[in-house]
Each structure stands twice: as structure tokens, then as C-alpha cells.
Amino acid sequence: MDKINVLFLCTGNSARSQMAEAFLRYYGHKKFEAFSAGIEPQGINPCTEEVMEEIGISLKGHRSKALVEYLGKKHFSYLITVCSDAEEKCPSVFPGISNRLQWYFEDPAAFEGSDEQKLFKFREIRDQINVKIKNWIKELGVS
Image (cartoon, rainbow, N blue to C red; front, side, top):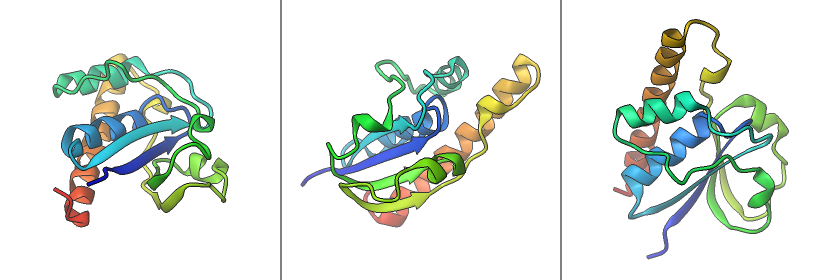
């Protein structure tokens, strides 16, 4: 059986989309092929790597990628935008996309505070994405 290709899209591909890609790979590796990209890639935020490592999921091998790396080059069963900014800037016609979903999460990289407060915010968003991915896999009945 072919795997279900899923592309997670956000503005910078530095936090939310990276987390979503990692969680889908972790939970759905037998049924899904997960990818992520950004409208304006900025590199992976070190806090993203840290909070994912805390729960035993490594981002080793991940890199921040531009949407154009995939546009018209790969078919995706799902394009999932994880922020409203990416949804607004994403082309309305995207060749090779079967379904578009919007899962908006607060941008942890935009949070201002102490280092510990920033990590707390990254953990909060990580945990929200974790729950969303697990529930979505269950909804699809592809476990």
C-alpha cells in the first residue's frame, strides 16, 4: 500500500511545521510520509529541537525548506497549514494537492519572555500539535 503524503506548511518552517512533521513520522511512519516547508524558511529554531529532544523525538536530518521545493514536483494527499499567515500566502491553486486543512497554532517563536518562558511556550505548542496529530490519525482510521 502506498503511504499517504502529507505536507505541513507554516511561515518559517522553524517550529510548528517541523514539530508536526516529526510527530507524524513518529506515530504514522508505516502509513504516512511526512514533509514540511515554509513560505519564507528561516532555519529550525533551537528551542524546537530542544523541546522535541525532551520527549525523545530527534530532529536530526531535518532542515528548513521552502515551499517551492515541492510545488508541482510531488503529489500530496494533504497540505496542512499550521498558521494563518502561511494560509494567506500559500497559492490558492497548488498542483498535486488532494486535500487542504488548516490547523492554526500560536507561533512559539514570536513569544517574548525569559528563556524559560520561551521554552514553556514551545512545550505548550509542541503538546498541542502532538494531540492534534494523534487525533487526526485516529480520525482517519489509519493506525
